[in-house]
Length: 282
Image (tube, rainbow, N blue to C red; front, side, top):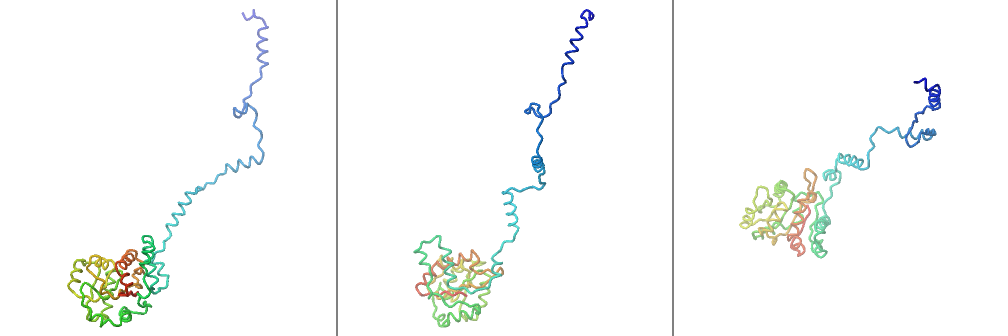
């Protein structure tokens, strides 16, 4: 049957196949429509190389950098009151120091008129300790007529001279130091450690006490509960210049400072303005 078709059929098929050109495989993306990519310039090649070379180190963002610096600052040792005081030269307390302490404590809670009422006049202060005195020598200087004053004292629930310090331990130390000054006069410990306030109130009601040494918190509590009267009080001495093991003064210990200022506001400042009471900074 193939012979019937003749040689013409074979020639037609072979001719068509010969005319078809082989299809070349187009490299590149579909968007380029098979066109060859243009050659990149030297600058473009260099920029691509730079982009490919990324640093191996982790680059911190700004928040991370802040965290790192915050951690470093935490590791640094903060200066304490002890560090500051250890490098400073001790200076004796002055009336201006006490006035400033009262002002800083009350300036946010009191009016201008009330702040004027809290100002201590110059004439209510005795001489300040220049750091050369013992407690006995200081008391003898500010109160030269102590012997006569103590003999005339007959009132109960009242004290002639109060020494205010920062702790119970310091109270016991001062009582030993004051023995040479007090003579035969009665002295009383005025602190809260192991001593109930009710027992102290009873003792004051039944005995004549000439001297009292204690902490501002307990003395203030006795005044508020009417166990201690300021009527006969002539001298109030603050143990201002003494420093504890951490080199802190009374004014450097927040709770003691607060109680000391509140004690002054519980009738001491009013008595100073009336002229019946003197304040000493030992």
